[in-house]
Amino acid sequence: MLVEGWLQRAARLAPARTALETPLDSWSYAELLAAAGAGAEELEARGVERSRRVAIALPGGLAFVQALHACLLLGAVAVPLDPRAPRVERERLAAGAALVLDEPLGFTGADAERAARPRTARSVQHDLDAPAVVMHTSGTSALPRPVVLSYGNLLWSALGSAVALGLDPEERWLCAMPVCHVGGLSILVRSAVYGSTALLHERFETEPVLHALRERGVTLVSLVATTLARLLDAGLEGPPTLRCALTGGGPVPGALLTRAHAAGVAVAQTYGLTEAGSQVTTTPLAAIGAGEAGAGAPLFCTQVRIAPDGEILVRGPTVARGSRAPDGWLHTGDLGDLDGEGRLTVRGRKGDTIITGGENVAPAEVEAVLETHPGVLEAAVVGREDERWGERVTAIVVARAGHTLESEQLRAHCARSLAPYKVPHQIVLASEPLARTPSGKLLRGALR
Image (cartoon, rainbow, N blue to C red; front, side, top):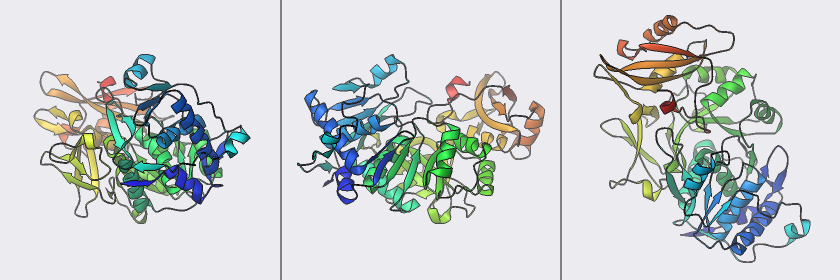
């Protein structure tokens, strides 16, 4: 099935609307289309053909978005890479690309004559079955894996998100997440599909994000639990235009949700995967603030079921074709439960399960309890080898500023909520932040 090019459609319907805003500059949809069109011409001149891969190793900003949309206009396949990653890793992830962009394309938006020249004489259409981008998984437990997402995967994800969260014609979605990961990139794609505005920060920094939430008319923001906590610690309260903070990347502690509610920050929890084009389940807008726990209900036209061993399975038009098992489902490797109304609660990764004395322990469950302690800033739970128990439940805990923690105090705190075999055998008090991926996920392998 062919559909009108998203960027071309947005520029036709609302050419003057702001498409992209950064802390330093902004482009309207007409300007972004002109920049992307000029970029597509440059890619062609450099030998890039339709369906060939273009690796984009640029920070999140105007140049990255121009390169992304240049690829989509041309029909090339964009491969976003982390420009801060070691060169050997970038070269490995870019293998097979026709071109690696580590410098901006020539068009910067400053050339008014080129900006005014029409770039859409030929109609741009997207084939929903064709590959659009190659994203890499976060690599928390293994090397990052490439996932080919089609135009259809991205479009259905955008539509499903809009059904869950509603769509304001004047939407201003703040992205302070890495655009080389699906959570950040999907905001740029959704905004083009909707014809709305994306506010893009190169990285998460508390004060600039806090300022944007207070002063820049942000209606939606994507966060992970750690960045939400940092904003609340910095004094975020009642952001005037924010409809909700979409928060995922792992379980969101109940204590953090309580803090956000008290500060007047509406939180929509979400569960997503690279292989499913970002969101799989999301708390619907109508249910935000109603006290619902967990990661919400499946997106429009997405199916979720739980396998007999507790694994979360996903099926629907957002799932990458190459990620589907022979049974037609995406086997996520995550553990979870569905309640009677189909709402998902994520329990953790299958591969992270700790087997101690023959009992299974989900680290995320123990972490959630630890993080309800008022003195705990963040916690990670891992299994370490033990001659008697097979593995011992071990917690690495970082204290909040001004708090002093004691191991036995924390064990007693856990014992009030957890079965005895789930209470950490050992608690390590850490002085440095826990190792995480750029998208905020715990790097458990580095903590074992």
